Structure formats: C-alpha cells, structure tokens
Image (cartoon, rainbow, N blue to C red; front, side, top):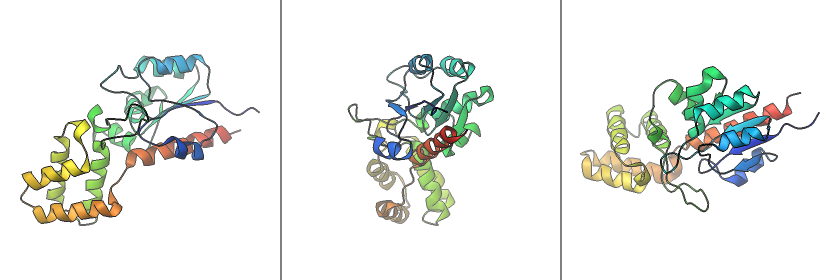
Length: 221
C-alpha cells in the first residue's frame, strides 16, 4: 500500500525544520491564500493540512474551496491559525480541527481573525509579533500560577486586545501596562516571569499536534 500524500500550508506557527522532524514526507507550502486549497485539491492529495494562511493583506482561504476538497474525499485538517478558524466554521461539513486554538473558536471564546493574526518576515515567514491567543494563554497561565490575580488578568488581556496586531510584542505590551495600570508591582512580576521563559505559544503547540495527527493518518492501514 502506497504512502498517503500530504500537502501542508505552514508559516509562522511552526518552523519548517521542526515540522519536518515530525512529518518528513509532506509537501510543505507557504501560508495559504484564496485559491491555494483549490489548486492543491486538483493535485489529488489524500490529506491537506491547513495551519497558516494570509489574513488582511490578501484574500483568505475560502470556505468553498475547503468544501470542494472535502467533496473530493480529501481529508482536510486545520489547526493553530487560519486552519483553526476555518475548521471551527466547517467542522460540520467534515473538516477536522485540532488543538487549543480550534477549541477557542469552536466554543466562541474567541471569534475575530485578529486573535491569531501576526506580522511576518516576508522572506522567512517568521512571526515578528505575538498572536493574541498566545498572550491570552500566557495571561491565563500567569493567573493559574498566582503571578497575577484574576482581576489583573482581565485588565492585562484588555490591554493586549487593544493593541493593533502588528504591534503585539511583549516589550511593547509590558510598556503599555506600566503606563496604563496602577499595579506596577504585578507588571514587574509578570515581566520577570515572561523573561524566565514562561510565555505560552499555543499556536506552535497546536501545529505540532496537527502534524502528529496527520502522521497517524498516514500510518493507518
């Protein structure tokens, strides 16, 4: 039995080296824009895994092209970023959503594209800003570990949400907190906690989970 063919649309959520260490045989392509899934489906792969896609600067992946791929019998998996968003919208038609970001969208805890949007280096696709879903998860972790109170967590998240997505960088975020809040001791504690490597990256975690899931599909007889 021949190995299943896989196309993965990947960008800032996970570096290519790590991706290939999990799923070597896939055809990795840059973040998807409108029409890319339709073109990929015409190639007849067994699996399409949508992780990253463009948001504001170009037309995003359309629902119709996902549904078209599903009608062809292609397994379509989504996670982390555009994939998680589209999976939450088309799960009832057969798209498979994987991970924490997908669950946030599915359960209507987040709804805006802005939650996963980042600005990227156009040459390397490396993220140059932080996704709001990652900041959200980091703040929740800080509250769980008593670095912040629940009230401070709400305040910190409101501040992060108010930043335009290309400017969401932890240094800028913390500077705003220092200027806009009265809880300077908590901001300093949070800043030190971040510098000690406690920030969450659920987009990366979900991308890894999605590729591991695809690997299990490949191994199925």
